[in-house]
Length: 446
Ligand code: PHE
Image (cartoon, rainbow, N blue to C red; front, side):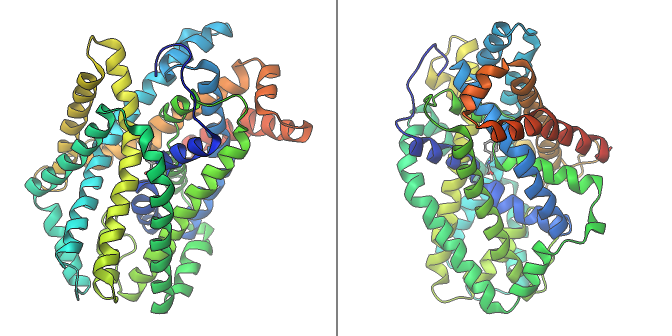
């Protein structure tokens, strides 16, 4: 992917599938609902949606634009574009911090991917059948309490990721994304239907969409912004790398809109599927990272056809997690490949093992190392906080500032193919609203 001009996506659809494969993942189905639950519901959702539209959309476009311009990996692209436009080479830091972010995220992402694999097996063995709230909680807690089992599943998930990336078949997955993602969507809708039948859908709608602005704090706003970056795979050079394969004729705005709408729909529908179960069973919406693992088994364990639906759901969730994880490992592999004499296979192994090793620290923080804290956070929470709340927004901020302020305006205008109103909106958003928004959120949270 690193060398001069290279292959392109065969079509806009393939590109959308690849970008959606990266964007839609655990962030939407696992993380979004528990963050909503943690942060008091609708107020968080409102800020999240604002961040997606006003910050996420322009930054997504900016990252693609940079990638398409540079036609190289993020680090070399930033180096070259900075030089061409007469700016400081320090801009390569954008690429470097992206690689670092991807590495850190994948380490804990894989642990959750492992939970999903483990729950796939549990659904087959009928572990959820007839369980009550207490039963599913016990099931989840016993998983968390077993470092060996967590390690097994984390390793299995990482092996899958390494296997796929090493064989370079990443692009072969787009076909699968095309059928499996809609299937996952359908299952989520089935769960929403189940939630409606439970009689707690009204509560759920109010919880998610009737904001109590008093619940907003600097911390909640920062969390919502971080989630917007995380869910769109921004601030990691990933979208930049994807953009480097993008043909000149592809309309960036229209494509970004499609990807963002899909991603946001999956997140919102996941929330609509989960909270009725929470309310119907008197569970704690603020349960944290375990939320989907203590709610969905309740639904699957007590509905007709639940075993097969549960199996399909966790399989598809694992698949969605894999397509995101692959996009996370890719930049790390490229980084290693370029800076060492290692072959692609060797580089994948080194990058994969390093990530896997860090992941072990993350999984131990649920049990043996639960007392270990870094700036008051468990290792898992620290990795998550450092990346989502700091690295990604800062890197994304740099990317948009670069496009809006450093690249030649005339050529950016051409590339975006906007009319005069569109251009005005773009300038207002890219030069002021998005960057200032990120900065205000930072300052407000301090
Ligand atoms: N966007 C993915 C998700 O929501 C996670 C991810 C983050 C993937 C960053 C790639 C890069 O699950």
